[in-house]
Image (tube, rainbow, N blue to C red; front, side):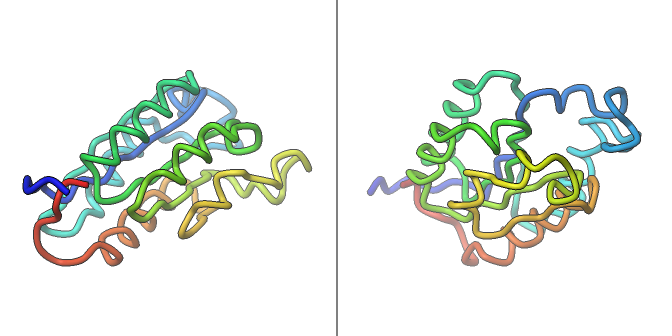
Length: 156
């Protein structure tokens, strides 16, 4: 274990098409933009925590961010979008991360098409929030802040 310390950073990772929030299917995803989601998540941070937000339409870029989180983040909030239902590679990357993971979905995936009812990410997530809209991100951030021990954390 390295002797370096890091601020308590939470990685906020958003998957494919979430860059279109506010434009794409507002009847399902609402009028808030990705920037609004990031602001809502930042506003929920406890003292001493920071947020690093990233969105990608590319599975490999999300995996790279999850791997980076292993040495830079205390926890991960992830909305993998459609990769929730298809990506064992994202699950494998999350399984290599030692901190808490919260899975977020803006819509209630269980009231949608049947193929959305199964999430591989849920197999690793410490909690799953679905159907709360952008407020689900705030709930996920608050939960990670509650799960992470007080004081600075060593880099893993």
